Amino acid sequence: MTTTTSQLSGSPVQLAAAIGSVLTGTTAAAQEKAEIRAITDAMIRLLAGAPLRSDGKLTIKSLAAEAGLRRNKLTHKHTGLRDLFYALVRAQAGRPAIADRLHHDNGALRAGSGERTVPPRRHRSPDCPGVPRHAELSRTFS
Image 1 (cartoon, rainbow, N blue to C red):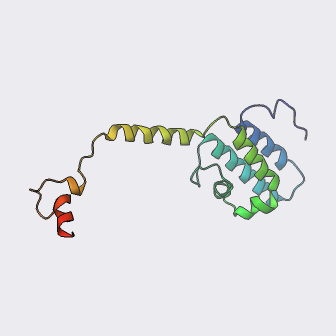
Image 2: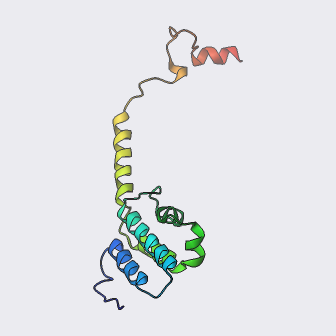
Image 3: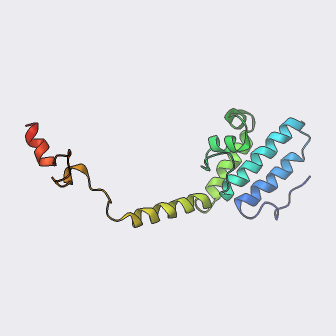
């Protein structure tokens, strides 16, 4: 099976899909084909920002969790796929979509929080029973 240049151009997700289909078409054993397919499918989900079984980080640990394999399958057996994953992560223009959404939501929450609803203890009024003011505490322990 030959791969054309048009199959290998495009986004990192398309690249992972094309390479996965090429690698599973080889004469490898059935178990190895299943591992390769699981790894490339996991790459596609992570790079697209739609993880199913992991935290969505673009790391080998997350890739292994997403593929449902032990990490040593990527670090010792399928080193080419590991290197491909790192290359695709570097080639990706920015963060995955899920990270962008989380970053945006975090910023919106921080901006919307404004004033604290409950002031810190040392600033509470003296009429709050059982909670001494900061100045009273410092006199007590001096």
